[in-house]
Image (cartoon, helix red, strand yellow):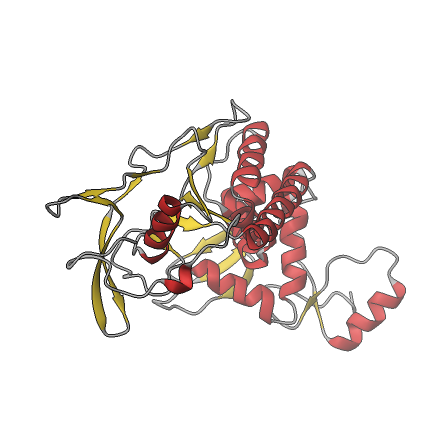
Length: 318
């Protein structure tokens, strides 16, 4: 960079480009135009300020992208534009004096993302492309997108409803929800897979659906969940200012020995399984009775372990 009494009074010898070497800077948030294979969406403010103040160690230095210095000391500055024609990039070639000066300035500027000495109060405008590193990131992103799209395409109707509930979407037509899910998988695969693979999110969505579809009922005064069809108690969850009653139910389903059986029954009913009849209660058995039933019954009903059901009776001796 050209030096004056005011600007660029620092050593930049470590930023020397080799002859034939090319470094490329790319404007952040540039997106490809899906309607044009060679087109890009470029933000309107696509230029970098050509003056800056940086900190090297304990020293503050004024830097500038100086193009020329006149006889009377008049300074003209480079205009640093990321153009649409260049795909939102600025390329600097080793062996070219102007490119070398621009490269040094862009490397030192606070506006460069990834600059270890940048002032974080500045907005990040561009980055230096690391071809090898970026290739790995792009391949990983592409793989994540393909995985997410495949997962979305193979989701059952039940999984579509569960995902939609976990995302807080309206209970719309399945085709509409599928389209929304597949769009998310394409545009934001990481967020999509985070929701899809989070068991607690899925459980919460199932509980919400079970309440909406009158499989479960929730009584706030007593802080209890019951089977909606017959009022049979499932669990009393702790009252707490932290977390919701849904979190309390999830804790019961995950961390108690008979929570698994209750969750399976909820899933069965949500999937169109036969609802519990009013006069029928899910029996509760002790461990010895469970072992006997599991070895003798050809089609055993879901078994609830322990005395969790408020109205349940032991049916072994009936």
